[in-house]
Amino acid sequence: MQISLPFSTSKVPYLSPLPNPTPQPPLTIPKPHPKSSITAHSSRPKGPGYLSLIGRAIEEEEEYRKARAEVARNGVDLEGYSIEGISIGGHETCVIIPELKSAFDIGRCPSRAIQQNFLFITHAHLDHIGGLPMYVATRGLYNLKPPTIFVPPCIKEDVEKLFDIHRALSQVELKLDLVALDVGETYEMRNNLVVRPFKTHHVIPSQGYVIYSVRKKLKKQYIHLKGKQIEKLKNSGIEITDTILSPEVAFTGDTRSDFMLEPRNADALRAKVLITEATFLDDGISIDHAREHGHTHLFEIIENAQWIRNKAVLLTHFSSRYHIEDIRKAVSKLQSKVSARVVPLMEGFKSMYA
Image (tube, rainbow, N blue to C red):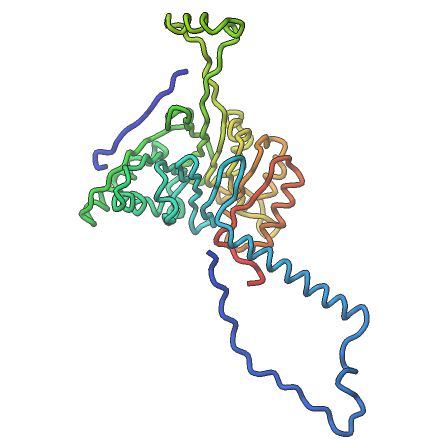
């Protein structure tokens, strides 16, 4: 298998606390009139209505506890990968997979991203690329090796200019390996891991990424041979194995749902884990509005659910208009349509009960 390595180095090179409740004046209970024949306990609600009020209160308390538990989680475990980060539409997106030493987009550069050696930029909107100089500078501050940053080729020159400006402003050397990786090209991250970009559809140039595991498999014509015979062929220079690429993780970034319909993007839809956006979730925003702004509506994912062959789907980039309860409800709609496990990335979102 031939792998092109378009590697280039630039010359220039919580849980947020609940708001304190507003102090309330002490509750005053009016004393019954001396002549009244109504005793205190006679005004208490009775019957099925009273019990239903209690039941509703218990249900709401349970919903509240579930919502707070979701907020407290920093990440999710999917198919052997611990995936964490934050992705709020229009605010910031950075998704981190420590097992791959990788971050996808950099948002405002959350501290957990700094330890990742590889950074994949999908497009140049500030909520996805704004923390880029801080990411590189902080790695330098901690004496970490220069990161490898992948960008769509069309923005490489402008990203280099961005770092030139920050070098001039801060008088600090910013070291990085900036790789312009185009759709269809392959880059070897390590001997058992490669990455390929795939086409996405946002309002500005964009691309997603698929990371593949690499393994060698003995060619069929040599399976019947014994060990010494195989060793002899290998020593003679004959290629006795095939290279097998298995899609592990796919990340779309911002995109319309069109990426799901492109045959060349099949690997993104059969990776173990698909990380994709679902900016809008309900009838409050139309599909046409989502498409006009280069985003995906949950209804479109449901409509194209037949193409999803992933084992897990991580939904991201929800609009900040939604609460945790809205997101969980939307996830259940998609979950009923696919065999894949569907999970939302909800860090940064609040419960309606907060």
